[in-house]
Structure formats: C-alpha cells, structure tokens
Length: 107
Image: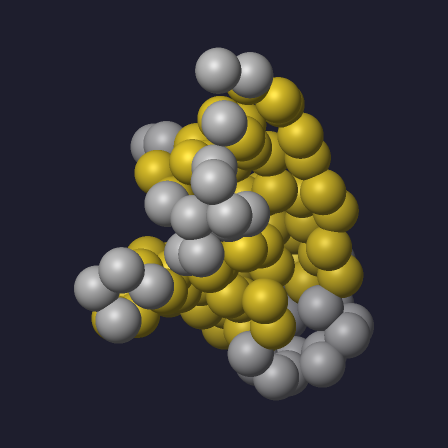
C-alpha cells in the first residue's frame, strides 16, 4: 500500500455549501487537520459535515462561530474517510474564511 501525504488550501468565496474533499475510489483517507482562518473583524459561523456514502448519511462534525481574526482546527482528531465519502464546508459570510486541509491517502 502506498501512503501519500497531501494538503490543499481553500477559500470560501460564497455562502453555499462547498465540497472541500472527496475520497477517491479505491482509497482510504486519514484527515489530520482542517485549519480554518477567519480574517474578518467579526465572528463568522462555520459548519463542516461529512457524507458517509456507504451509509447514505451526512453528519455535522463542526459547528462554531469562529471568532474575529482567529484560527481553529475543524477536526479534533484524525478523521477516517472511505472511498466516496465527502467533506463539505459552509460559512455564513463569503470571502472571509480560508484554510488548509491536511490528509493522507492510502491505497
């Protein structure tokens, strides 16, 4: 099995629910962190959810008013995703939340 460490930056340009990551076919993913940064002078509500495609269910894993000019981690400990599972994120204000997701894909 090959382990590939990756990271990807994101910037939420809308208030729409946005797909952050989808676990590829034939792989398992360990998400280590989802760093969130609010560069606005006001708190902004942020939600992160995971769709477990094998169970046909979506679970909210993070719901918080991210404080003004602050950073937080949207994952408390490693998050395991199976092929097809999806991480989605939504912010109440556009163009203010950005960050980085760090993960390892396992074949």
